[in-house]
Length: 129
Image 1 (cartoon, helix red, strand yellow):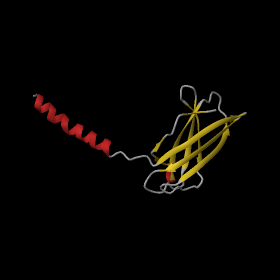
Image 2 (image 1 turned 90 degrees about the vertical axis):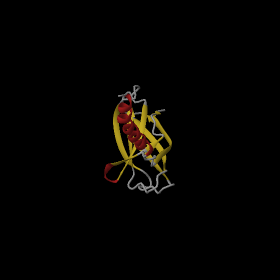
Image 3 (image 1 turned 120 degrees about the vertical axis):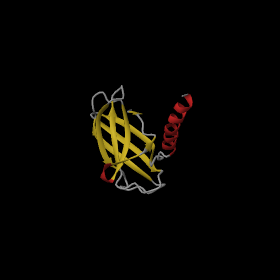
Protein backbone atom coordinates (compact mmCIF):
# COMPACT_ATOMS: atom_id res chain seq x y z
CA UNK A 1 0.00 0.00 0.00
CA UNK A 2 2.79 2.44 0.93
CA UNK A 3 4.66 1.62 -2.29
CA UNK A 4 1.52 2.28 -4.33
CA UNK A 5 1.10 5.71 -2.68
CA UNK A 6 4.77 6.56 -3.34
CA UNK A 7 4.41 5.63 -7.02
CA UNK A 8 1.24 7.73 -7.33
CA UNK A 9 2.90 10.83 -5.82
CA UNK A 10 6.23 10.46 -7.61
CA UNK A 11 5.09 11.62 -11.12
CA UNK A 12 3.41 14.69 -9.63
CA UNK A 13 6.59 15.62 -7.79
CA UNK A 14 8.67 15.24 -10.95
CA UNK A 15 6.20 17.29 -12.97
CA UNK A 16 6.30 20.14 -10.44
CA UNK A 17 10.09 19.99 -10.35
CA UNK A 18 10.31 20.21 -14.18
CA UNK A 19 7.95 23.20 -14.23
CA UNK A 20 10.09 25.02 -11.66
CA UNK A 21 13.16 24.45 -13.85
CA UNK A 22 11.35 25.75 -16.96
CA UNK A 23 10.35 29.14 -15.49
CA UNK A 24 11.50 31.97 -17.70
CA UNK A 25 14.13 34.31 -16.34
CA UNK A 26 13.39 38.02 -15.99
CA UNK A 27 13.33 40.03 -19.21
CA UNK A 28 13.51 43.46 -17.56
CA UNK A 29 15.61 44.46 -14.55
CA UNK A 30 15.05 47.71 -12.67
CA UNK A 31 18.45 49.34 -12.16
CA UNK A 32 17.25 52.40 -10.26
CA UNK A 33 13.87 53.80 -9.23
CA UNK A 34 13.10 56.95 -7.25
CA UNK A 35 10.01 59.00 -6.48
CA UNK A 36 9.76 62.45 -4.90
CA UNK A 37 6.81 64.44 -3.68
CA UNK A 38 6.51 67.92 -5.20
CA UNK A 39 3.55 69.70 -3.58
CA UNK A 40 0.55 67.87 -5.08
CA UNK A 41 2.59 65.93 -7.70
CA UNK A 42 4.58 62.73 -7.63
CA UNK A 43 7.71 62.59 -9.81
CA UNK A 44 8.98 59.12 -10.67
CA UNK A 45 12.25 58.29 -12.42
CA UNK A 46 13.50 54.82 -13.26
CA UNK A 47 16.17 53.17 -15.35
CA UNK A 48 15.75 49.63 -16.62
CA UNK A 49 17.81 47.10 -18.52
CA UNK A 50 16.64 44.45 -20.94
CA UNK A 51 18.27 41.31 -19.54
CA UNK A 52 16.19 39.06 -21.81
CA UNK A 53 17.05 37.45 -25.10
CA UNK A 54 14.78 39.50 -27.37
CA UNK A 55 13.82 43.13 -27.93
CA UNK A 56 11.16 44.54 -25.58
CA UNK A 57 8.93 46.25 -28.16
CA UNK A 58 6.88 49.33 -27.22
CA UNK A 59 7.82 48.89 -23.57
CA UNK A 60 5.18 50.19 -21.15
CA UNK A 61 6.08 50.79 -17.52
CA UNK A 62 3.25 50.31 -15.04
CA UNK A 63 3.51 52.21 -11.74
CA UNK A 64 1.44 51.09 -8.77
CA UNK A 65 1.33 53.70 -6.00
CA UNK A 66 0.86 51.98 -2.63
CA UNK A 67 -0.28 52.96 0.87
CA UNK A 68 1.57 52.15 4.11
CA UNK A 69 0.16 48.59 4.04
CA UNK A 70 1.43 48.21 0.45
CA UNK A 71 -2.10 48.17 -0.98
CA UNK A 72 -2.56 49.85 -4.39
CA UNK A 73 -3.98 53.38 -4.38
CA UNK A 74 -3.65 54.06 -8.10
CA UNK A 75 -1.97 52.68 -11.22
CA UNK A 76 -0.44 54.71 -14.03
CA UNK A 77 1.18 53.62 -17.32
CA UNK A 78 3.87 55.27 -19.41
CA UNK A 79 6.34 54.54 -22.19
CA UNK A 80 10.06 54.03 -21.78
CA UNK A 81 12.71 56.06 -23.59
CA UNK A 82 13.49 54.58 -26.10
CA UNK A 83 10.17 52.90 -26.84
CA UNK A 84 11.82 49.56 -27.65
CA UNK A 85 14.77 48.24 -25.67
CA UNK A 86 17.23 45.82 -27.27
CA UNK A 87 18.75 42.93 -25.27
CA UNK A 88 21.56 44.26 -23.08
CA UNK A 89 20.42 47.88 -23.54
CA UNK A 90 18.99 50.31 -21.01
CA UNK A 91 15.92 52.54 -21.06
CA UNK A 92 14.56 55.32 -18.87
CA UNK A 93 11.19 56.32 -17.55
CA UNK A 94 10.13 59.71 -16.22
CA UNK A 95 6.59 60.31 -15.01
CA UNK A 96 4.66 62.96 -13.18
CA UNK A 97 1.23 62.27 -11.73
CA UNK A 98 -1.12 63.65 -9.10
CA UNK A 99 0.04 62.69 -5.61
CA UNK A 100 -2.50 60.29 -4.08
CA UNK A 101 -3.31 60.80 -0.41
CA UNK A 102 -1.58 58.21 1.82
CA UNK A 103 1.05 57.35 -0.85
CA UNK A 104 4.10 55.76 0.80
CA UNK A 105 5.52 53.25 -1.70
CA UNK A 106 5.50 52.45 -5.40
CA UNK A 107 6.27 49.34 -7.41
CA UNK A 108 6.86 48.76 -11.11
CA UNK A 109 5.81 46.18 -13.65
CA UNK A 110 6.25 45.99 -17.40
CA UNK A 111 4.22 45.27 -20.52
CA UNK A 112 4.93 45.35 -24.21
CA UNK A 113 2.91 45.44 -27.41
CA UNK A 114 -0.61 44.14 -26.90
CA UNK A 115 -0.44 44.35 -23.09
CA UNK A 116 1.78 41.27 -22.77
CA UNK A 117 3.32 41.16 -19.27
CA UNK A 118 7.10 40.91 -19.07
CA UNK A 119 8.74 39.07 -16.21
CA UNK A 120 10.91 41.50 -14.29
CA UNK A 121 13.21 41.76 -11.28
CA UNK A 122 13.96 44.37 -8.60
CA UNK A 123 10.51 45.96 -9.04
CA UNK A 124 9.99 47.24 -5.49
CA UNK A 125 8.15 48.30 -3.53
CA UNK A 126 10.30 51.43 -3.28
CA UNK A 127 9.82 54.21 -0.71
CA UNK A 128 8.52 57.57 -1.93
CA UNK A 129 10.81 60.37 -0.69
